[in-house]
Length: 303
Ligand code: GLN
Image (cartoon, rainbow, N blue to C red; front, side, top):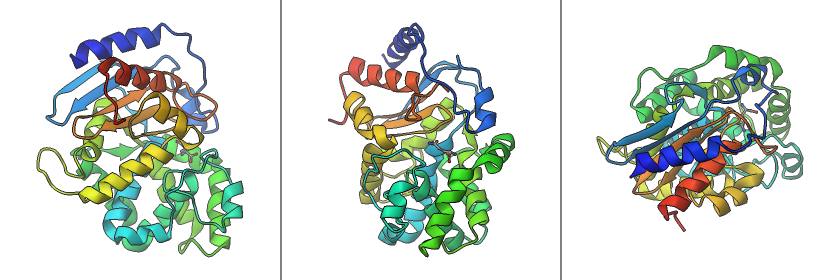
C-alpha cells in the first residue's frame, strides 16, 4: 500500500509548478539541482518504500540539530533545559531579536541559537566532541559510513556571519562556556552531515519507537524523553512555520535548508522527503506538500 501511495504523491507533487529557491546564503547549497526530489518511508518493522532520487545524499542542515539535542539530553537529562527552552520561537531560524530580548537564552534546541548552545554543552560533556558526536549519529543511524560534506562545511564556515553573531551574543550574556569558534566549528560540521532519504528515515525510526533502536530495542532516550523531544519537533521543528506544518501534516518532524524534512508517526513509521526548493521560511515546498498528501491519503496523523 505504501509504495503505491508514495508513487502517486511523487507524480502529483512533481506536476505542480515548483516555486521556491535553494538556500543560496550557503553558496555550496545553491549548486544543487532544483529538480531533485525523493520520498522514502520506513516502517518500524524495517520495510522500506521509496521513490525518486533516493540514492542521492543531501545536506541534513537543521535536521541534524535533532541528533545533537538527543545526545545532549541523553547525557544531561533534564538539566539540558538550563541551556535551551521548549517554546516555539515564532521567528526565523536565525533571528537575533528574541535572543537579545531574552538575555541570550534560546527558545528551543531546534533554532540556530539553541543548536549552538547544545554544541557548547556537547563540548563541555564529551572527551572528543566531534568524534563522539559523529559516533553517536552513526549509532542511531546504524551506519558507520555517516559523515559530513567538507565542501558544505567550508562554505558555511566562510559565510556563517549570522551564526557567528548568535553565538557571540549568547557569549556576551555568559551563556556559552567554550571558545565561540570551536562551538561554530562543531555546529557547521553537524549541519553538513549528509544522508540519502532512506538513510534518514531509518535514522528517525528511533523517535517513532519510543526512543529505542528498532532492531535491538537499545534505549537511546527514555519513553518520556522521546515524548518530549517529539513534542519539541512538533512545536518548533519548522521555526515560524511550525503551526502550518502541524496544521497541514499533523506529524512531529524537522526540516533543514538542504531541502530535507524528516517526520515520524510514533508506533508506525519514519518518513524522509527531499527537494531543495525552499519557501521563504526555509522549508522545502515539495517536501511539505508531499507529507501533507501522505497523511491525507493514509487518513492517519497523530491528531
Ligand atoms: N546550517 C544552517 C544555518 O545555520 C541550518 C539552517 C537550517 O537548516 N534551517 O543557517
